[in-house]
Image (cartoon, rainbow, N blue to C red; front, side, top):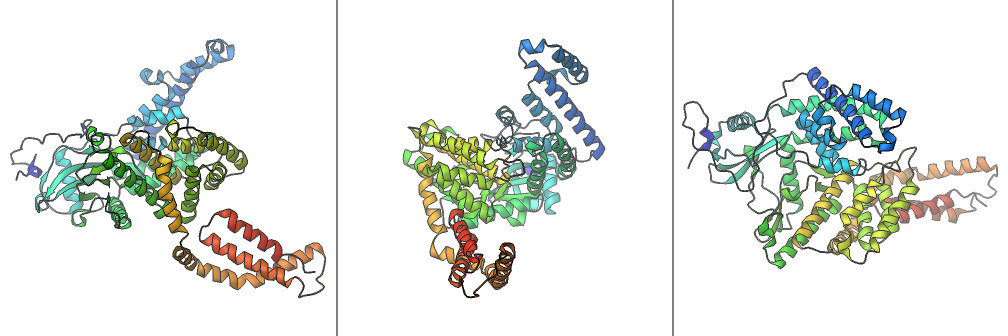
Length: 569
């Protein structure tokens, strides 16, 4: 067998380079390691591009004004001032619209900022549509490291010579992204695998750039607080720094495989731990086709319908059952395997939903597909974080109107369910309602599922496909065994609360008595109301602990509180 790991080694004859793998993107030049650049140098580069973006953006804004406004004296003076400020800025860049300038400058700043732009492209709840649409054009195939440096990185990460582990490492990369690079390889035992590395110097580059970005976020927060730049950049750094540790991706793949062990139609790549480390990942090569390949549409309709069902079941289980989902889902990360089966790859970025958020999103999505506009608006408002200037009532009213407009569509082909969710959360910025990053990632997964579904089965009713799987998750959620398990999980806190309840009720009654200045005439009067109120409080606490719909347990809490604090008569 040809050993291409010996390619470019001193004293060895270099074999002919491997032919490109079908579908593999051509590398965009050779990767340049900027990890050794000093903090001051990167800071100056970032500030230079920020200045150029502000000056070029102002120039673009003035060019976009109507002609009658551009003739006003104030605008003429401002144009002269901006022309002076923008004089040192690249003429090629400043002539572009602002969204194009932003994208190009992020590309010029390198991998960290390209990754940031890809995250910002998903924030349609905060940024204008023209900006997010342009950021979606950011490079997804970046310069690759040479084959020699790739092999050196593998040896350095695993602490062993490549020839002791692999019989063949393909020289043409399968992909080269901002952080990692992957090649097809064959182990000595003949297993075909994918080898992925963290590019040299990327770890240092990310840590240095994220430090700068956090400082920049604090500055921009002062001028554009409504867009929450400080929070966005903090979330970005947290997610990105996880990706440079490939052990996280290995853990994710094994966690997904465990969660779907009873669903053979949903496949995740096996991890070879003996060939993996913090900077190197070796995983099973899943041989299949992408949903966007022409061969996918040539499959029998029964197979395509089966794939859509598998995809819907997998996405709904990930998000609403497990609260642990693929957060970088797009058609290139999905594979159609023989069977047919559905394969998920590139698991470095995952979303995690804490229990309350997972349940609220479940009720929100179920309300959407059931056509309950009022409940959908209520649950979506509960997901958002509010501040002193938030208008939750106005937000609910507008989201309810958007949902009602969708539910009145005559044909489901006329409106996209994913588009409805995007439109709804996009209303949040106007009412100062901030949605967590997990919500945005969940929407991206839903958008991908819907797009692939329509690609394989044009005109499919995504709401109907989703509804049957949501019904199953809801039944599992409220099954007696699950209710008991959730209740037992909350039992220690509940027991602690019950032990303190008599003292809290007594102190509450004293406060009410002092406030009303009406002493109790009979210490046994109102005992039934107090006991019933205590029962309502306990029942409400149990339901709240299990994550039941809030109107039910909130009502019990209200009744209990009112009766328990009622002055004795």
